[in-house]
Amino acid sequence: MLSILDRSPQLRGAPVELAARWRGHTDQDILAWLAAMTCKWYDNALLGIEVNSLHQKGESDHSYTILDEIADYYDNLFHRTSVEDIMNNLPKKYGFHTNKASKEMILDRLNAALRDGDYTERDMEAINEFNCFEEKPDGTKGAVEGANDDIVISTAGAVWLATSYMEPVKLITPQKPYIRRVYNEATF
Image (cartoon, rainbow, N blue to C red; front, top):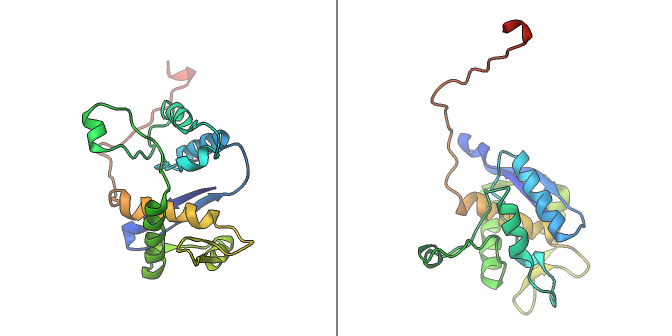
């Protein structure tokens, strides 16, 4: 699952909105590369890969290998490196780790963004998933029996990144106008 949001509407006071979404099934390393290529296409978008999804229970953790490899080619990766790790010159920990606390955090932000008009969703499949998302008797949150919640979680992570984690969006004006000169054989 991949959700890319457009923050540029914020420049005119409008909410963040969906720019692109990919849903399908492929190997996790291929999905990570697909996500990096897609983020490159969307003006070097911040890529926040959920590291939990890069390995299955019972398998060794290959997430760091994949993300470190991607970092050699795409440098706008979300990392959760602590200040202490940075001070000790430890390598960056790429990717978003979903646990009970971080899942609550991103879901709370999505709920607030939808309630307060900070995010606009136009994908009916996403809206259907939002409507089938519930709090379970044990306090966990997820899709009702027989439904999916991949879009909900992906969107929640993207909304949190776009509205709570990243610096506010701002208009950048070039310092000098860029003039492109085209030469052909007759020019020389």
